[in-house]
Amino acid sequence: MSEESRTLKSAFQAAEEKRITLERTYQATSSTYQEDLAEALKLYQECIQIAIKISLFSPNEELEDIATSDLPYLLLNFRIAELLQKVFTPTPIERGAALKHTREEYEKFLHLLDTYSILSQSDSKFFAAYIEDPSAFSTISITDPTARRNAKIANFKMEKELKNKLEHMRNSPRYLEDGGDEEAVRELYLTNIALCTHMAFQGLEGINREMEILAQAPTPLIQNATTAQDDERRRRESYGNDGYSDRLDQPPSTLLAAGNGPLLSKEGKPLRPFTLTSRQDLQRGVFRPGHNLPTMSIDEYLEEERRQGNIIEGGGEASGRIPEPEEDNIEKADAETMKAREWDDFKDANPKGSGNTLNRG
Figure 1 (cartoon, helix red, strand yellow):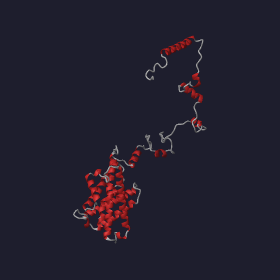
Figure 2: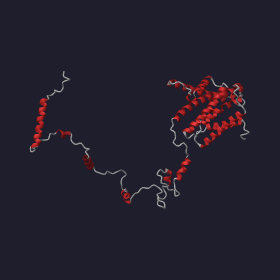
Figure 3: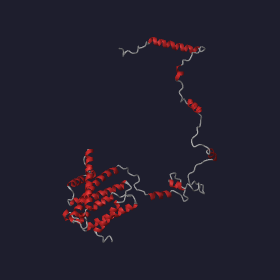
Figure 4: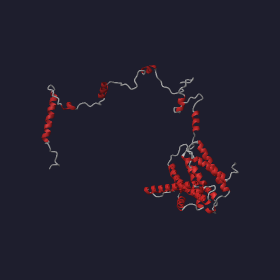
């Protein structure tokens, strides 16, 4: 079926099948996943173009004026916002642009629901707070840690209840989209919209948190992002026609590939790293043990340490021995006698305890 003749229902079914397939895939960075993601985004964009062309929604209508079969089309912008968050962006700048686009799609989705008064009372308050300050929007505005934790638990429980209710309704024959009760099917669609509304506000809060992190990311010096193919091309251009390069930071793959080749080229240029060794060095290392052998004996080591002054001599019993005076050395004996007399004079002039004049009892 060509794109010109494709109906809104067929395009929406194809987009939903692609989205469900992507949700069951976990390799989000693979090229196949990104191709399927781009295809799903293209299908949802086509659905929006068809809906605009046929004027599916009008600001003059109310929720009761929308046919039950047309209620799923209210989620087109929400589905696009969901998929945009999964797009792979290699740089912070591209990620920021993707987040801004995602925020715009969330805003379109919530504006459409607000036009038809589908938002609940709490969701309307959230939407009003978001309109007032989009960059500072948060579903939890309180600062107390305990209260914030309780609010997060309440949000999680609400999301879980909506998912369980939706799962129960989908498993019930009464809520079958084909052949079921129209009122029950309408309730199923509105419950799904309520869950998506809750997820939209959570997504907007997550975008604000991620934008704060991206604002702190360093700005790249090279604005033009290069790919791996460009790096490989520049690396090859650095080599000559004979494969020789003066670069010292060659990739390991190049060095390993040349490890089994010739050492020198015909012109005498080195083709791979090598180490200069002599036959005598190899011969001496044949019977050498694996560990390093000592280069000096213990006595030589101690003598060198003593020469450098690293050994303190004295102490022990030897320090308490008083050397006997040399009777033949008269000058030294006189010096010792004068030193003893000066010490005796000092003790006579300074009796024991004479200096302690403050702490006497």
